Length: 407
Image (tube, rainbow, N blue to C red):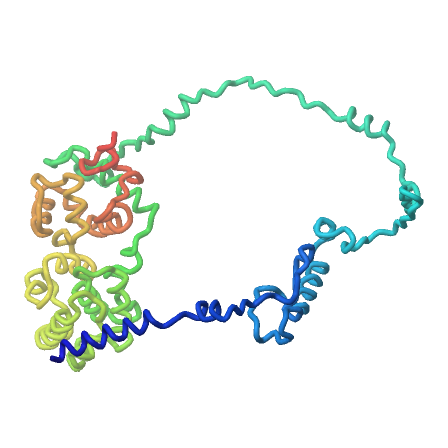
């Protein structure tokens, strides 16, 4: 029943809509057609909304402009537009900015204008003097090259590197040794020459420069030992700054032994593995106080027993602190460069392996300078990444040279 009731209501509403007459049909029945009372002249293009029939502008909607709007728009056109465009809109409305006067006589128009007086120059230009100046210019004679330059000879000179003269050994050093590389002496002399021309951080901030020169010899030896312990896998600049902080707190075995570990770690940071190294330095200070009267051992065996001291540190410490050459201090720079220069019979993976092979054939007179020489060379030219092979004097006699491979 509910569905039928809804259908009945819908049909009733649709019948009512169809039966309702529209407004236009009602007006047609009464025959009341609205006719305009005002006849608009076709010549008038614009008509104001105020002039429409009815008297009240609010009853009509028209897109036409009001009288005030049209007057304001025509005023804007007169002021903003230039004279040329204004004349195109209407010649009568365009302003004429001229001193000329027009008079009409019949069909003709006479224009009266002001006559501009002739301008006379005070300084007259002499044409003859200008011609004389043009003719007086000196003609530069064409240069003829007597000696012709050969471009090919210049290219060959630039491309061919300067050959370093062979150096003869001095101080009675024997060069005829069983070396893996026949050019080892020439390579060594080239490294010496390059090191003399280019300073490295190890020269001014190495472990041998970290000791306090104003302190006694015993304290200076302790400073060199501590600097070597901190230098492992750390740049010389970082080690040097850490040593300055320690020296400001009076770096002695007794002061280190009394200092808390946390405070010592803050002084060593950002040295690599600074926490482990702080423990090693503190333990070493205690051993030196108990066994060596706050001095360091004077032999390799005792130095190697100290915590955190390896073969490289021990040999360098013996050379710098006690002036005794017991072996070659091989670090990452010496290990890398010896493998690149082919100074080893077999390639090595560990610095200690490199030291053993190097000491087997290198004359003992050269052991003292190898570490300092190769460390500075590795910091400036033969760097771990992207070595400067183009600027190296050994580029033609080095197996690892990238410049030699390009040729």
